Image 1 (tube, rainbow, N blue to C red):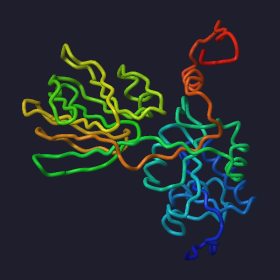
Image 2 (image 1 turned 120 degrees about the vertical axis):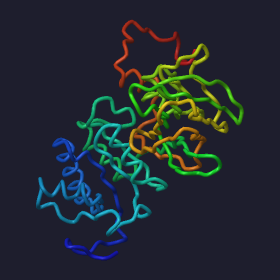
Image 3 (image 1 turned 90 degrees about the vertical axis):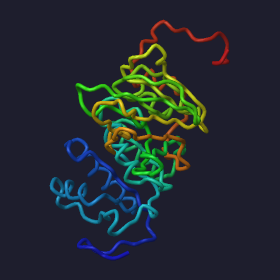
Amino acid sequence: MTPDRQGSFDSSRRHVLIVAHTGRRDSIDAAVDVCRQLQAADVLPVMSADEYAGLTAVAPDLLGVAVLGENVTIGDLEVVIVLGGDGTILRAAELTRGCAAPLMGVNLGHVGFLAESEREDLTETVVRVLARDYLVEERMTLNVRVKVDSEVIYETWALNEATVEKASRERMLEVVIEVDGRPLSSFGCDGVVMSTPTGSTAYSFSAGGPIVWPSLDAMLLVPLSPHALFSRPLVVGPDSVFAVEVLDRTQGTGVLWCDGRRTHELPRGARVVVRRSPVPLRLARLSQGPFTDRLVRKFELPVTGWRGPAGEDARA
C-alpha cells in the first residue's frame, strides 16, 4: 500500500469499511465512535474519500483512517459496518458489489429492515465484529438488462427491485409481460416492479405484493396501478426469467430504476430482462432469529393476546 498524508498503512492489519449517512450528525458521530473503537483494537478503519472528509470536518483529530480506492481495495475488506437506514445499506451494497466482505447494518433510520442492530447496541456490535462473532447470510440479487432489438444498451443489478415506470406523470406506460420466454399479458400501468424476497418488504410491499421469506429463492412481479383484469402479483422460481417490453403504442418513454439508485431511460420498443444474478449479497447477522419476529418488530405489528402453541414445539 502507498502512504497518504496520514502516513503508511500496514497491509497485514484487519480492514473494516465504515459506510455512514454523512448528511446526518448522529450517523457522523456513530462513525467517529466506530473508528476509535476499531483503532483501539488495532484494526484499520476504512472509508470512502468523501465520507472521510465529512468526518474530519467534525473530528479533525481523527487520523489513521484508510481511504477506499487509494490505500485499500474492496478485496482487502473483512467486513463492512453500515451506519444508517436501508438506503445507506443499499449504497454500501453498491460500493462493495462482488466483494466477499459481509455487510453489518446498524439502524440509524426509521424501519431499517436490512439492519441487524440499533444505535444503542453499536458498541456491542463492534465488539462482535472484532471477535468475528457473527453469522453470514446470503441474499439473492437480480441481473438486469435493457435491450433494444438485439442490442444490450444497459446492464446493472438490484438487491431489492428493478422497476419499469412511466417517465411522465400524465402518461400511461403500455407494456407486455413475459415469463420464461412466453407472453403473459399486456396492459397500461404506472409501472412494473420485479423484486427479490429481500425487496418484498420494500417497494413491492407498498405496491400490494406479498411478503416472501428471505430463505426462499424466488422472484416477484407486481404491476403498479394496472388497467387490466389480470394483474395479480406473480411469484416464480429462481431460475425463471422476467421480461417487460415497452410497447410502441406508449406515448412518451419509460424509465428503469434499480434499488432507487441506478436509472436508465427506456425508449419505446425497449425490453427489460430480469433474472437471478450469480453474485449474492452477504449480510452479517448477530443471531439467527425467526423472520416472523423481524416482521413484528420492524412493522410494529400487534400480537397482543397470542398464547403460543401448547407444549414445547413452536411449530405444532
